[in-house]
Length: 249
Image (cartoon, rainbow, N blue to C red; front, side):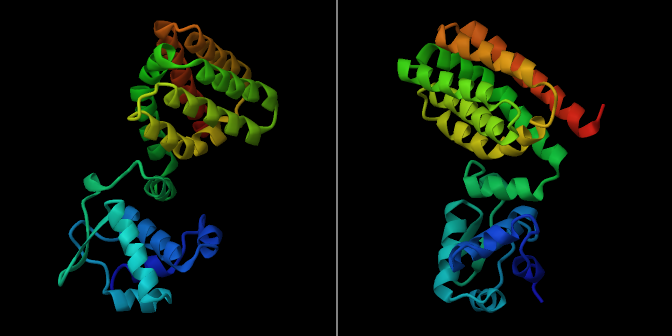
């Protein structure tokens, strides 16, 4: 039996219902993607033969080929004539792809995932806020204010708070008007959800509202230095909040 057999025939517990509702090629795409990101095959190893995979997963060759093409487009595999479909080194994967990010979140432990997300936020968010303070349009200002007001209006509704918070941070990246920042903002719409859902359970919301308000006002007032400082403070406190909530320290 190929060592990936059990992995691809068994949906992950947290995604089983979602996978079951997908069409055949997307279901296979999800099963294989999860298995590859989990590391069930090493770089350079080949997937089982096409017919074997079709039998294992109960799908047609057409569905299987579409699924493999999707994985190849994300950089996870390299289909080669006569050699099979080889797993590529993860440094070559498109980690900004929403599916790859979702699979990574699903197979990573929470502490490792959050640590990497905070590293990325510290590296990009202060700079994005600085650029947004210089580049944002009047329309961007209106959108950012609306996102912030939605956070205020969320009150004790954790779900509404999380959606508004995600929208606020995405708007900052979009307001840079730098297309190379936009994918990071979209990535955070997926990658920060778990982080924000954890943070929503804490008691720091009044302070967080103040910090988001300071950041919003600095961007709208076109004060890049203040925007950078506000973003650094917000991310730093968010990291401490998450650590305190998770480890009850």
